[in-house]
Length: 477
Image (cartoon, rainbow, N blue to C red):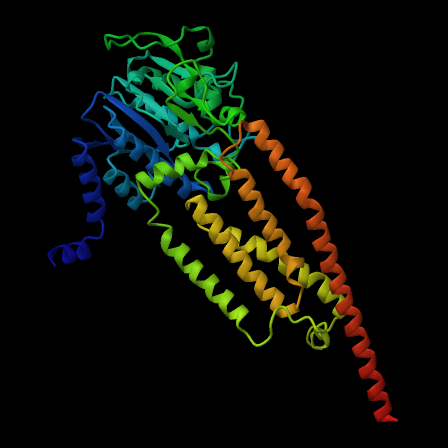
């Protein structure tokens, strides 16, 4: 009662309380938007900023990664370098997950106008704030698309800067170790202002340009006595296993260093948290396994259940209406469409039916919650597309196989790609290609059958129209 009155009279006090609780939870106070104290002398850190079409998906990815580190019982703080426009409820949830939220001003990107700049990386230079976390002796800076197979606390024994080369000549900034330093941080800001050459305009290009001699540095091997090294080191590839390596053998076999962290430096639309990324990229299930073990799917389930109920009701109504879908005694009459739409029935059918079929496959795809579990996502998509197809079959009396062959082939492709007993990635790829070769004639045949049926309907409608016109002339005469 008192809390409700207090919040009503002081609408900004909730913000103050949240910030205080975050600081108190992690044994810290705030100063200039940054927590000044911590429990540990080490930290795993990542960044979170707004301004891209996929802000929510990356927020979910950050939560899963941080909670997976909590489950691994790492001996370090978890830090989120968050821009000040990150929603307050997101920051509160991250605090509840066990992270310290460090609010920062966005670093203006001086490379945003260069040719071929990807706008989604406009604020990625916020990663440089990792060097300002001087309350820590070492920080492991992470991107959100990492999966930890085991804890990697030995990385805190590395030197002033350490990174892995998943590209033969350029190290990857999806995971690197650093020693925070105000001097280094100010030097980087000075280089930004001076226009240090940056090939991609993002954090990857800038950090690689700043530490441009890392390739010549020795490989990191953690000292057995637990002491910290000084200097720059290359990290073994096992700390940044590119997911693409997995798909050659469908297993991990990287001998250099512990196989500890998988990274996904792939196209954005196949990041592991998207439901459609599996079974195209089977490792997506590893990420979703970690999500089930950490934050779950409570945010997506209400929408998924609502869509499921809608699709099931649509299926029932489509099946149990007056006319059977299998009733193909004669083509339907579309003469009424001509009078309603004021155009040729042939033009209507040739455009409306193919468009409706395509929409039945596309609309459900975009309605499925993007970060839901792949099995639920594909199930919801297939149910949605089938419900729409049944409605189209009912309206236009289209032969069932003419429009459902694609649905059947999509389902078959999922089974082929998800088959768990392939020897290696080459066999898997050849199997998918063989399936596509086998399925293509059936798809072509269904399209030919659909167009032939439409032509039959048009001709039938044309004959009926002429017959009606003759009867009208007879009556007039």
